[in-house]
Image (spheres, rainbow over the protein chains, first blue to last red):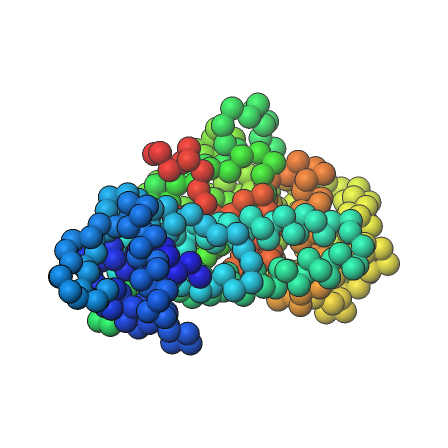
Amino acid sequence: MDNTQTLLGLLGTGPSYGYDLKHGYDRFFGAEKPLAFGQVYATLARLLRDGLIDLLGEQPGGGPDRKRYEITELGRARVATWMFTPDAPEPLLQRNLFAKTVIALLLGDDAGRLLDGQRAEHMKRLRELTAAKRGADLIKVLVCDHAMFHIEADLRWIDLTSARLTELRAQVAGA
Amino acid sequence: MRMQLHEPAGPLLSGRDLRVAFGGTEALRGVNIDIHAGEIVAVMGPSGSGKSTLLHVLAGVLKPDTGSVTYNKVEITALNEAARSALRLSDFGFVFQFGQLLPDLTAIDNVTIPLMLSGVKRRDALRQAATWLDRLGLNGHGDKLPGELSGGQAQRVAIARALVTAPQVVFADEPTGSLDSLAAENVMVTLTELARATGTTVVIITHDPRTASYADREVIVRDGRITAGQSAEALRL
């Protein structure tokens, strides 16, 4: 899962402090592994350096939590590119895809479109594996089958999530 | 009589703004689709999405409430039932989920049916049917009744029946839906290899990604609309 893009996406919902961003992240994505404060501030410093966020204000004498950040147009474009660029099918893809889906819903963007894009990428890989099995020996066939079953599991998750987007949108909005 | 195929200057089969309602339920809500000659296209979608209705409309089995289907430059939605029936017999082949073989006829007799309906003499029909059963690895099974065949064998008989008239387009509705993984794989390998070897266009309705992966591309139907995977050509309309 790409924590940098995810934090940037969360900042796309409105200006925020590092402290609030960390808790926003943990609410959606940190059930198993909450984000460390240090990682949040290091990420924000990188995003600021790269022009993807702006510093709105800083209270003198305050700690890092007193800094308020806002996403820039460049940052919004970066989030959109991240969301709508399908990932290469691989194990444990779902955390990143889940993050993209939630961020798209939080930003009022088209989560269905990004899931369709990812489905197409998975189907492309499935077709490649099916083609690779043609005329191959049994060892290679079984290796391809193993990869195909993982892709099918992802596809089932994509289909189920697509079917539940309305419900998920409501849940995310109320979180 | 089979339609003379025109040189490909566009899609072989097109649907435009297809709408179908059953009572108050809209099964298709403005579908545009293009399928080119020789393509193998998977139509995917959840249960009740409208994908089987789309197949029936494209194959001329069902007339849409509005919209048009054009096959080989002929608007088949403008044809009467008799003409559409003749077209289905001459140009289209069908494979269904459960094979739908006639249970009281042997495998070989099942394969001869579309030939004999087209006016082929029984002896010639039997010879052609035997050739197709051989191609599908069913040598020695011709005299068996469908009930004596495994699911995979019965589905291969159904494929032989669909291909024996050398159709331009084969419509397959969940062709692997009743089979285990290995039998499903054998059926899809058989169907797609024969289709590619003969240049036959295939439209496969399936909810199964692995079955769809034998196609050249897939389109996704959801709530009566194509939501992904459609050609840019059709989406521009």
